[in-house]
Length: 209
Image 1 (cartoon, one colour):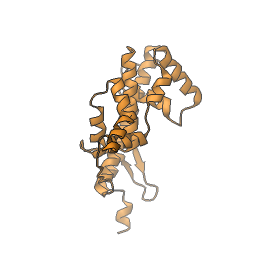
Image 2: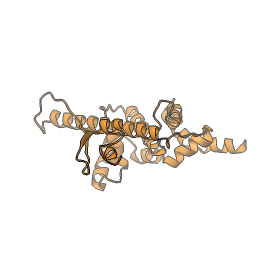
Image 3: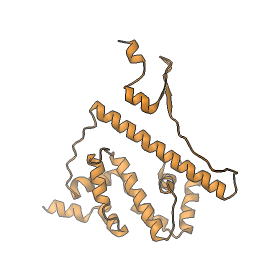
Image 4: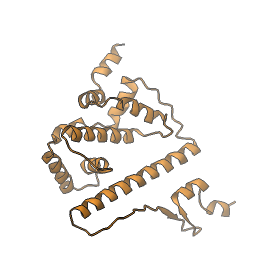
């Protein structure tokens, strides 16, 4: 019993939830981890989701409005290893100009280990994964690709809108299409990603029967 009280007192995730007024976020984390909404998130995905909500709350509290996809992109610029130090510094400076305490914000971001501790010790969640089942793996892969495609579309649309609205490019009313295709160099067939997953693979499987 004392261990549970200790875990509750030292849960960084719960502290940040309380400080930013993120009521309901703990329930979302639990549901996503257990796959209650038909999509099971990894701990790293949960940490990204959590940190994006912290960023959203910080901007909202500072009176800053955001466009679709902007939170995800700003979080990526702050945390991704693929982002240069110059771009990260530029992003941090922009947030500072918006009134964000960038050092506190980064300190309030959590790791996937912290999310795991929060779920298993603070909320006493028992994790039962079906991720090893082939059908679940295919469904999870399709969901991941769709989510990334939607994010790519949102970030691209936001970037194009910003460039157009600041007169950096000329662009009329537009539609954006994100088309992902896979070409198998062995059998020579081309598939849309959704089709490839739905069919369970390419023609190579039939050729080896």
